[in-house]
Length: 450
Image (cartoon, rainbow, N blue to C red; front, top):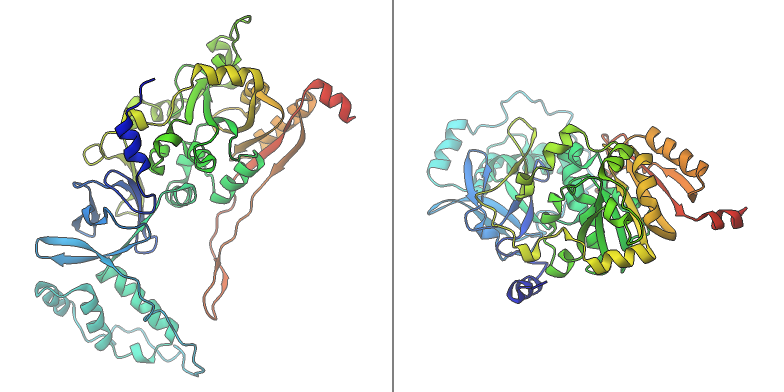
């Protein structure tokens, strides 16, 4: 296989802490009000309010930078904001004042809408408008320190929106999708994702076998943990691999992309002396993909995916064909598994197995891929619902194929940690799904354990 050395060196020389032209980024607008993925190019733009802002100023900036919308000489621009701690040091003073005497009758603010529009026509920045609103408010000084902070944040989101430049990695991508478009990743929560990797014993130099029908979120998380060691092999029933579009958002280097491969179940089962199981048999055994998933796996979905919330609060997923550069074939993840690697997997087996296929019967697929594991190897199966995993667990016990079987239900609750107002969040997800985990054994191992 020929390798383009210039492409390989260019990818390896990139600083993962600083953005570069063509990299994928996660843009957090107004502290989570809008979340979207984009690819940084000279022509990429983002719409905030009724204006379009170029993303070119974000190129070459470190991840974690904050940007504020401003009106420049050539039009609206995103200007980088240096974080300061002057306005964040709220002194907790012993005072008896509170907000009980404040009445919201729309008479506290003397600055009218016409005055604000006039300031905008004269070129006033968002910070200047906020200062004018504070100066013309009759109740701002009477508010508590916490109420003043909430007032400032509310006005800042309206008149001086900010964009936080975040690095896409397993946690941030999973949180963004779960918050805005959870069904695309099978309602997989971030704590469930981390537990899934741990129960499957995914570590450096692991040979991980995946059945990933969650658009590649599991594949990217495993490859990120391996860090360019071992292999991530996506297997599938039939002739078409499952799409892994989310992997493109991770900004993986050339070395890591070369470790993400795919191979069919029939090919992994076949040998020189045995006849490989037919595709029809594997499809019937595992109740292969339903019609909605066939549409997702169309070849046209290989473009960079952008997830954006529209004005109605709904999440839209679209392909940014015009702004996204073409992905180089040399750095594209998901190539065909090398013949030498397949031969080693047939001889030694995989060290880990993860199944995340909501549209398949867990038992139908695990009885086909579990024999591909080496003995004493760990496996983990994710599903949104409990009953399919309970049935699968019973069948594994009856067939004496695994030990240490357990079904886990991760539970996560977030806390707001602030001075004098630390408490649990009032709203949280009901469940993050269920995980069936265990260890593969052989018949002789089962006899010895009794």
